[in-house]
Image (cartoon, rainbow, N blue to C red; front, side, top):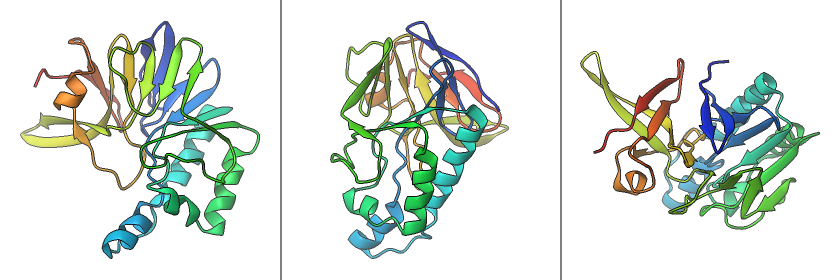
Length: 221
């Protein structure tokens, strides 16, 4: 399992190559911005048809992360579904798959801006969660400390061997950590965007998702 380590408020956290975050001591797995059912929402709103496999792809990767970490608590950090109708449109096989993943685990749905209401899929529904010295919420709050959030889908853009490469990334400094989007059909906000640089300190770093994980300083602009 390819990981690095981030220390936040004295807590050691491990970003995973999948884009998930693992906290060893409470055996906690955190995922952000799954956007399940996005192909369904796009078809409903625009008529554009995309291959409808993103939900199963995400569930498969969650299952692999659970098997690799043995997590007993799962926090879905908001925008788990692309909208409420997308949550209701899950087919029976997907609902049963999700129920199997939840079985025997504490499963927490944090509210996001795409899915502001509770969904009838088991688990606990919260606006935010305080766990030890950390606060888990969907959208970062200016001045927060010990905060783990999502929402922005951060992506790094680097040049390697003469080619420009874009990869989803974790962004972090001494007080906060912003997770990448875990979902299959998700865009991203470049790591130097004002919205992100305004939240992070000058010493901010990025852990680029994939094999292997690379940790780099975040450019000023």
